[in-house]
Image (cartoon, rainbow, N blue to C red):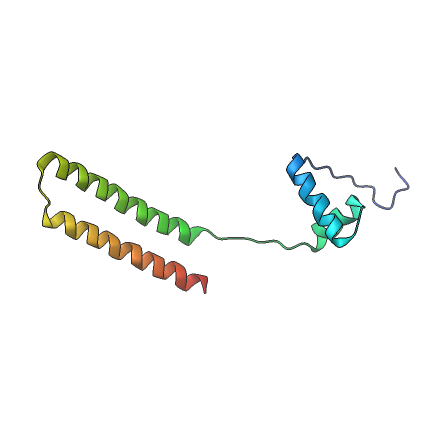
Length: 109
């Protein structure tokens, strides 16, 4: 092993499904040499870095409105009355959701 051109060894573990996908991709480019394929993909492959910050903010806004709606529904079930403040709270929550969606879409472009 001391005389090898590539003396550093790296190992990976795969599921059966992952191994099958790799085998298919290797066949698509016409190679049977896993080492060459792996080196090429590790060195020249694409890295996709996704920032979910805005999506998490949007999820938070939706969750807060959902909690508010649930609270309002419980209050309506107990009292049998719908209050104007409850409707206003839901409408305000909808405005916040739309604002968050617009901001998210703006940042994606």
